[in-house]
Length: 121
Length: 108
Image 1 (spheres, one colour):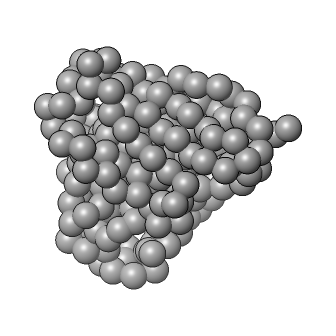
Image 2 (cartoon, chains in turn yellow, red):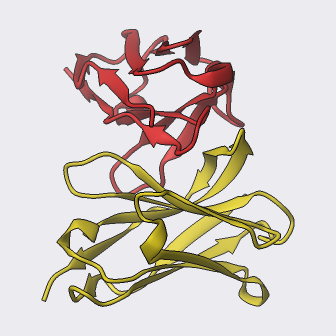
Image 3 (cartoon, rainbow over the protein chains, first blue to last red):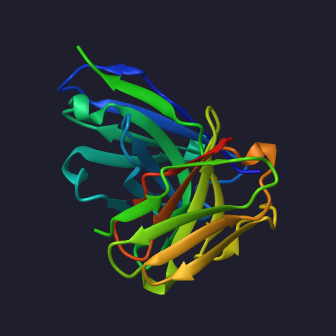
């Protein structure tokens, strides 16, 4: 059974960098699939942030691309998200997920429970 | 990007009733690349349907998906107590993948 668990600070100051980690169990991130971050701001819809392929290729939503980095830590079977220069608009529930790709886009077959990140001074 | 509009926003039904949820796309969804998810409070979202009509692993057959082009439907044939949740559609026919705003199925 594939399981994902997000972790990281729940509070980040404006202009700083948001950093989250997703621990994966039940499947090796180097065996295939895409490893994904998705977020949902309060009262708003779900937004795909970006995806990391097991080979190291990355794909980002253009709305966030200049501020986002997704990386893999294969020895720990984890992957991470960094969002730089955060503002209150980055306050959201952040989910990690496993993705399958079709035509350059993705759907998501396993998700973590999510972690709430608030941007505030 | 493709905008998905789900209706209704809230569906109030009793256990045993049939639920019909709609997802309409602003443009044609390529190859019916549409998925449905269920989300309950405090739980990880769960993939129900992909490819518009294929059930994900372990999903009961009371859940079914249909549609093509711009109009898609998720049907729950007989609601069980554990089915009361929020449901989201998502298209992956073009990048970026986008989601609908969700339909809440609540107990009447």
